[in-house]
Image 1 (cartoon, helix red, strand yellow):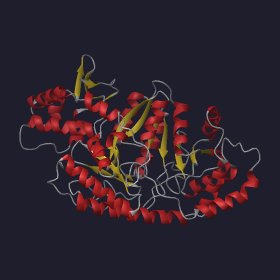
Image 2 (cartoon, one colour):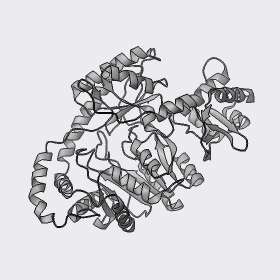
Image 3 (cartoon, rainbow, N blue to C red):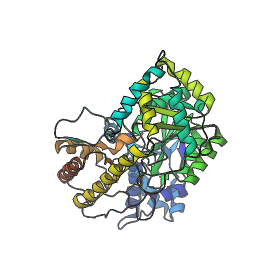
Image 4 (cartoon, helix red, strand yellow):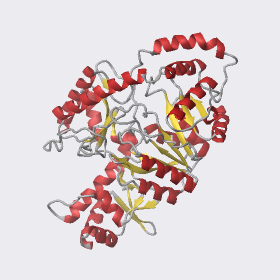
Length: 492
């Protein structure tokens, strides 16, 4: 038995051939083709509930006999990775046991016990400037006390955020900014306002797990579009938007969580054009934008700011401190006003003192950010070196920004590895935690935000867990190379 979802879309023979890449290997061709399709499903490159091309169409696209495609499809049906229904064609699926395992994987567990390195949360400690910023905020509090309710956010903070966007090339006025209680609040508010039961919300696969949670909490159905070292598959994004008519699209364009990829300037313009053409609201999560560790800072997600259906989400949590629950949403003034009204059912405004602390930190400009980037750069390089030494079979790209490596384990064992790792003193989030439908079992996210000694202990624990697992694929060592995913020298 397999998990079968209602099919929203179809991939053609040429498209599937592109996804599979160089799939041929020694042995029966049908088995090699089945292996390639299976890997694509587990990695999320071929989303669940996607209608695959017919056997004849795929055979033509791949330049093989129909016997090969028929044999591959037959094997995949027997395993549960393809399911055929009369009138619906053949769609991708997961075997029932694997689907259940993916659904049962919580990302956040109880706080780590002594001696356990917790890598489930990618977050740095507070900057040294926080204490003085908090003291100045307390001194400023009498000028902003009043009744304490500000559903849109304090004027002084909205102006500071607007100035940041303007400086990045997106002219912004304070009435285009809504202050929220963290970026997650902004995501949930945006989803709840635009989508309800049965509506589609398009997300990347993999993506930030709590964006998926927000869609499901609203009763909406998240529809995945693959993303990887080269960024989001924009062709498939466009076709998905055309086919499923989503109420909202949620993307992470900068130093993507978890893959680390950054969307090109051309890609951003293409997405903005898609929003204008279809009338679909497209949200770009920019919480990691300030954490560029190499090369230029990414272009502003909102461009010149004139795309009425494009929304940007930001936060203080990754750039400064997770305990400072201040986020924001930048969009058209009428949307900002509507969201401020919608929030009243659950939230009457972000804490005033927290907002004033955010103002003081933003006034410091790049100072706290420079220290944070130095820390992350050192952690990234250390983790890459440790993995090359202790776990050379694992493959990954060294990202030019963000907080984590997205590792290809070479085998669908992420959940098993995460369970074993805890017994060896390290807690990690398995790949399925970042997907819509239980795939991504060959991937693992490893943040480099903890102290160097903890990072060393974490890799030691992972190496022991990998050995206990039987170390599948350990024979092929993969060197670590620098660079942006999708650029020269990057490895997946």
